[in-house]
Length: 431
Length: 145
Image (cartoon, rainbow over the protein chains, first blue to last red):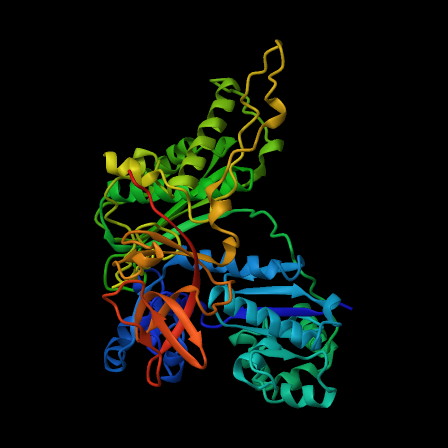
C-alpha cells in the first residue's frame, strides 16, 4: 500500500520575495503575472485583507495604496532557484519524488511509518528542515492516495488538523476523517474544476464527503471515468501513481504578450526570433528535432473597439531540425507572410511541432549540403547552449533577435536576483 | 569592455561540477603520459567554501564594523543556513528591517549582537527589538584584480 505526502510551499512567490528583504516583515506582499497584469501570489497579510487570487492589479491599486501593499513583478529566476532548492532538500528524504509544480511535490513515504512520531513526525521533520535550511514555510499532507494527500495538505494549511502544518489522514479515525471531509467544499478536490463543481452542486453534492459517498457508476455515467477515479481515490483506493519522470514534450510552445502594442514587422521579427531561440533550447535539452514550425500573431482581443486581426500558419520543414538558425529562418518566412500592417499587435507565439528524437530522424531526399553540415550544426548549437548556460540566457544570440527589444514584457517592480546574479546579491550592513 | 569581460568570468553561485571533455582529445601512439592516471584532481573553490550548496547563500558586506573578524567592506560572505547558530558565530541578522552582520553573543540568558570594531557598541537584544538570525557565516571571498 503506497502512502503519499504532498509538500506544498505556503504563498511561494510572496515568501521568496520576503525571504531576503527584512523590510517586508509583516508587510502585505503580492506578486503580479507577466506585464504586471494580475495577482498570482499573495502573502498571508494580503489574504487576510480578502484580496482574491487572479484579480487584475489595476482594480486593486487604490486599495493596495491604502493598505501599504507592496507589489512585485514575477522574479522567475529567484522562484526557480528556490524551487530547485526545495526539491533538493526533499531528495534528501526520499528519492521517490514527483515534482508536480514549482511549489508542490509528491513523495512516496510508505517506508517511513516507523519514524519517531510516525508519518506525521516525518512530515514535521521535512517542514522543519525546509524552514531551517531555506527559510520557507511548507505544509505536508499525508494520505493513501494523491487526491487525499492534496486534501490533507489543504487541512494542514487551513489549520483543520491537530498539528500545525502537517496533516496525516492515515492515522486518523475513519469517523474523524468523514467528519473532516464533510466540512470541505467539493471544489477543493483535485481535478474538480468550476464547471464540475457547479454541476455537482446542482445535484445537491456540496462537500467532499458527499462526493466520496456517491455511487461510482452514477459518476461514471453522468460525468466521466476521470471523476469516477477521483471518487475511488477519495475512498482510499490509490489509482494515480507517482509520476517520477516527466515525459518529453510533444510540442514546444513559446509565446508572450507584449509590454506595449507592436506595429512594426521588424519588432515582431525580433520577438518571434527570440521565442524560437527559447523553444530551440528546450528542444535540444530533450534531444529532439522539430518537424514543423507554427507562428501566430494577434491583436488585443480584449479591446474589441480597435481593429482586430489574428492569423497562425504552420509549415512542415523539409528536414527535422533543432538548429536555431534553420528554425528562425522558417519562422520569419511564415511571419512575413501572415503580417498585415496597420494593426497593433498584442501577442505573438511560436510552436515547434512534430517532434522526433534526434536519433530516429529521416534525412531529406534532396539534401543540398549533405550530412557534412550536420555535425557542424550540432556542434555550433552545443557551443551556443553552453555559453548561454554559463553566462546567462541570451548572452550569445542570433542578430535576428534584436538588441534593444522594445517589445519585451513589462516588469516594473522586479526584485533583484538575490541568488542568481552577482549584482543582485543582498547586501549586509557592517556599519 | 574590459569590465564587461571581467564580470562575465566568475564562478556561478551553485555551479555544476566541471569535467574535462575527453572526446575532443587527440590520442597519439607514442609513450603514454606518466601523468595520465592522475587526471581530474584539479581543485574546485566551491568545494572548499561551500559545504552544503542547497542551504548556502551569498551576502556582500558594506562597512567596516567587522574588520576585527577579518571581514572587510566588499567581501562576499558565504552563509550556510543548515548550520545551527550558537554563541560566538558570526551571523546574518535581520534586526528591525535591516540586514546586519555581527557576532552572536548568547550567554546567561542574554542575547546581543557584537561588532568587531571599537567604534561600534554591542547591540543588546531586548524586548521590542525584532530579531531574526538568518544564517551563519561560514566563509568569505573577494576578487582582487
